[in-house]
Image 1 (cartoon, helix red, strand yellow):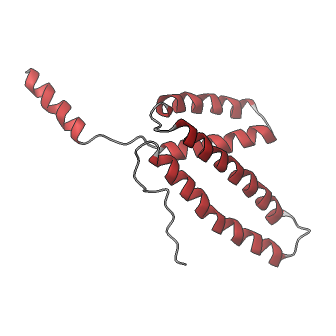
Image 2 (tube, rainbow, N blue to C red):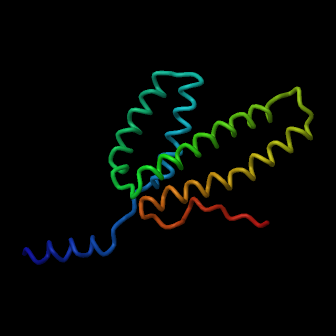
Length: 138
């Protein structure tokens, strides 16, 4: 009987599942959530952050390089702050439709940088590039 257990455990070891969502996706959500809290805190957002922090505690210990992770996260925070500014400009009725369209296109192109940051974050957790990588015809 013990052999059956061992065979099943070996099969699990041979085909482990990756953390889902990816560490980068969770951290990206965490950054966005905290920016929302900075802008307009609510009990719901604070509760959501508490739950997300519990999930993050489980995965963050797996980071290969803590300093590099913090550096990449600082870049991700700066990215999202800039995107919020751009999105505010896109919604600004005082700008012409052409100006708003140009800003929206620039914001879309800027998302490639976000995908690269998330890919680099995932590498720190031994994750191969996958869904974070944007596919764009240049």
